[in-house]
Image (cartoon, rainbow, N blue to C red):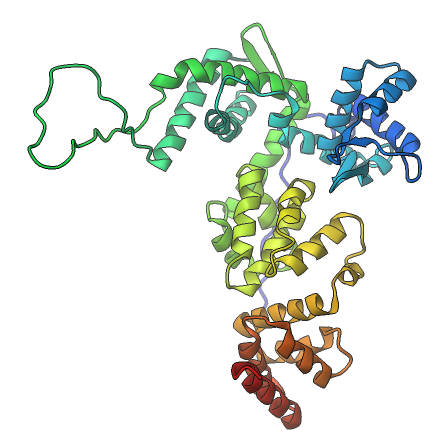
Length: 456
């Protein structure tokens, strides 16, 4: 019996949300300076016209800043600020030690969705858009960054100005929850008071108390001020006179992320609260579009940095299927994942996947991206993918997988598979021998498996 799954009606944004064209106009206005600097760089610093960077870090050199400031009628600090904004919004893409115009700049005037995606990328990177306080440790800053999505959700649901003391109270509660989840234990000195007799044997027993926010109230207030100023600098909210209010762009962006979370919670897989590995397992049986929707919702529910780290860790595991799915999820992440992917591209287990990801990210056609792999890397990837098919697929799929090998003949494939050094080579060859209907080929696969097993 054929059953048609009921479709969830397309969600409607909150009443009063501007139309997408109007939101795109607001985003273009907010990013006008960044687009102007990106276009100037595209014209003045194209191939063969000199380098824009200093010290190999894709940061504008002093000479380039002065050049741009003179031609655009800006101050050097404005040029640097607009350059940084353009990088965060994807108008300029950084690849290794070089920077070049991003695809969003090409589509800036004609594609409203590209403009909105660029602004959302800037919104996601709000903590990088404004310098963090120097007198606060990275742990405290990280807690505030992790807690701010709940603060933004409260602002969105409030649909109007919210006093800063109310936001500070909410931030304190969320930081307390984060610390409680980590079960932080305070081993510091006890409060002064009547001395207690120490036990005769063994060291003193430490007081086991969960660290609460009380001692850090004075730290959270300036960190909340920094977060609100940073979000205001990217155009997500207005901040002043002791209150904060989401802008139409900020209200829309927070609603979109909340909706993505709700979609995941209502989806058949329901992976919103799972770790990366369990989420990927839950997506293994989904069609590609449904899996990508699940990835987007899972990513929307957590900071992008920690999400990318989780996906990379899942890719390092023994399950080859999860490795491939992890890099599919990283394709959904896009540019923010590039530093992590580039950092692991020398790890043998991840190298072929990372090279393909980087090639596609830099504009290569997915069908041609495999050309960046050496013959050995392509063979290693074939074995890894075959291991995923052997573990999770059916026998005919493994037989059809032969067609994807770069080697022109099966004997050539078997010879190179034996030499490539993949830890699952024996299991793959045995599974191939069991699945293939050709007795001669099955025998050759079994012989190759035996030779690998015995070190031949």
